[in-house]
Image (cartoon, rainbow, N blue to C red; front, side):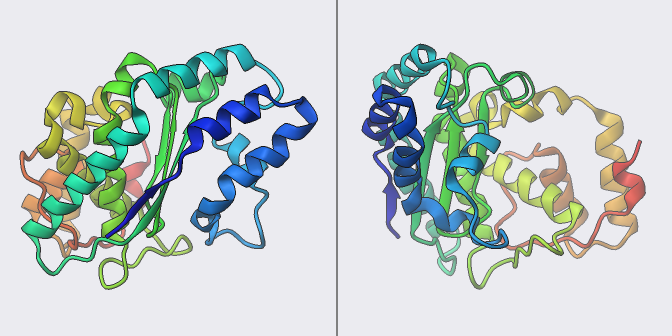
Length: 263
């Protein structure tokens, strides 16, 4: 497999130093090699608008703060660390399951929006997506916590990429179930934790729910009662991401009933 980690650092610096009227054009050129990650969208999405909707660095404000964030990404060797982590993780997957297919992937690392309240407070300065085989997207605000988790975040998204690669689990945005999301997120988290430990491997956005025993029992019991195709032990590891070892790539789930996700 080949991971093409786009060298977006110089491109982002050029964008942020450019005249305001030129920034959108330069951003579009930077994102274009990764445009395939939007292939499930109808029509031809505007790459600049998609960047903004994903809380990417702003083109019309906070230039100095964005430049400072970019400096921190560069000083942290973010691009090299992500590439090395992906290569190491792919080797682990292939050793664990010689029949697994790790797809080639284009990796887009972008700087997040320093003043987007939802991105900073709710998403904790990290948006990432690996659901589209062949593409990995990481949008990062380089806080100390997020920089420490760069590798774990990258391999979490790689797990999604491999899970949904041809020959594995089919991901269709029109039909994907809540159950599939629960399983896929739990397995990806468990994989990252196996490689980087509980503190760094667990996705930050889910840490606050780790001790929620009621939610764990509710989802686990319902999954078993509904005769899920994945075993209860797999659901235990997947839903709560508690197991020290991830159960695999291909385990599947039927839809979780509405009562599981409604209060």
